[in-house]
Amino acid sequence: MKKFLILLIIFIFLSHTLVAKDLFISTEPINAAVYVGDDMVGRSPLRIGTLQENSAVSLRILKSGYEEIEMEVELDDKRTQLLYVTLYTPNVDIILSQRDKDVYVNEVNAGKSPLVLKNLPNGTYSFESDQERITISNAEYARMKKTTKWEIASSAFLWGAALGGGIYLKNNDNEKSGDLLLLSSAIFGGILGYNLLKLWKINLNEKRDRAEMNAIEISEISIEADRDMFTNAMEYMGKEYWDDALGKFKLLVSLYPDSQYVPLSLYQTGFIYYRNGEFQKASTQFQSFVYDYPIIEFYTFAVHDLIDSELRLGNVSEALSKYESLRPVYIDDPSGTLYIRYYDLLVELYEESGRGSTQILLDLEGELDYFLETYSDTYFYPDVLLLKGRLLYEYLNRDQGLALLQSLKEEFSKRQEILDQVDEILNAR
Image (cartoon, rainbow, N blue to C red):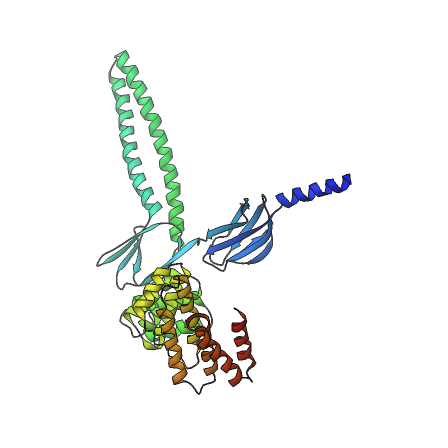
């Protein structure tokens, strides 16, 4: 009995002290490899479970092109702990797309734009541009130049003061004033020595900075025709080289602002941001597209992704405002795929907005009816009819929805996936 009580006490103690924890890790940018010790546990964003409270986790976070991060995470007494990590590149690349301007980097002529500057040390830069030149200055370099001028000026003053004191001592025999000047000269001389040491250190830093600047790769941009640039960007998208495609699309918009390919480049840029989870950037791009270039073939896709981006950001009121200003959506997709996407989006918008606008669901019903009237002979007709039945059954008119769903089971009894979905809807409530 005594042994049993001891084991029970130990069990209770362990159950209260060794509580399993969840650690959520998110990175900017996403898709970074996360290691616990030497073991890769997944790619961000991810959840690491079954950790123990009051313990430390050794993490390594790696992503190609970014500096590796190592850290120790102390787990607190919360059941779920969040960790957000920003990754930084060791160097940056800058594309200067303006034409026929002299480019200066830290007062050194780099050539005429358009240029690509690669391997610039990561840091803060200032950009100045006028009719003839573009000036790029590294903040640290500018600070050192300013400090150097000040130190030279102050050192010259101190040198003159010390030298003047020495000359005065040589030409005068006044003992008291001589002692004072001797002391002053010693002080000025000491400060001068300190300033000279600082100048030496600044000089070393300037040499290091110049060495880093000498590592910059400067190359002229090979200006492709806008059509070739767009074609290459689309090829990159086909291969899922998202960063390369993004760079091409953005460069095209910058170099050829009047090109016929600008609207689609804006849309594809927004799409890449959207699929990468960068919803704020995606929203900005889609807004430019739908308000400035409402190309009908892509308009409904862009409106969907714009509203969804705002929802993903938690901006429900903004998502609702975007929907109200851009409706009706005019969905027209014979495959029915876009109707399914809009169904999920508008139902979520209705739920998230507190079910305050039934008009959202009535609009959705109108879009579904348009498909059912226009594409009644397509293979996807029952899929969209199923959406109509679900919308009625769950939100608008339960009896009508039930009748429609039951008729679906009878009419399409040979399509098992339709039968399964109908049963799922009916059994959900």
